[in-house]
Image 1 (cartoon, one colour):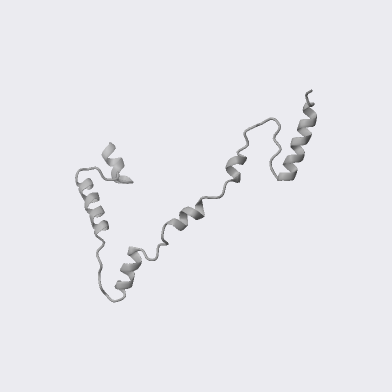
Image 2 (spheres, rainbow, N blue to C red):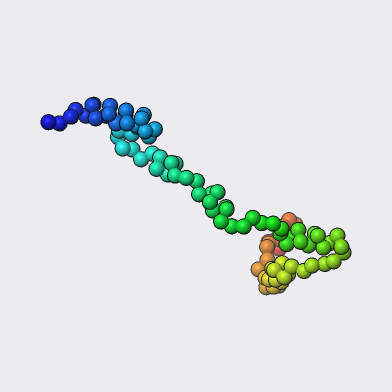
Length: 103
C-alpha cells in the first residue's frame, strides 16, 4: 500500500512550515546549507589580536620629539627597488621620454 505523491508533498510542505525550513520538493540545489551556517568572520577576527599601533604611528610619536626612527624593512625595500632600477627592471617611463625612444 503506497501513499500518493501529492499527500507526501503536502506532508513535506507542512513539515517545512513547522520547522522553518525551505520547501524544495524537486531537490534543486539552492545553497541553503551554506547560508544557514554561522558566519566565520567574527570568530576569525577575534583569533588575532587587535592592531594597537602601526610602525608609522610609532614614528609620528617620536617625530614630535624631533627624533628619527629608521624602519629597516622599508630601507631594505628601497634598496631592492634601487637595485632593480640599476639593472633596468624598474617601471617604464611615462610621457614624452618614452615616445622619443620608440622612434
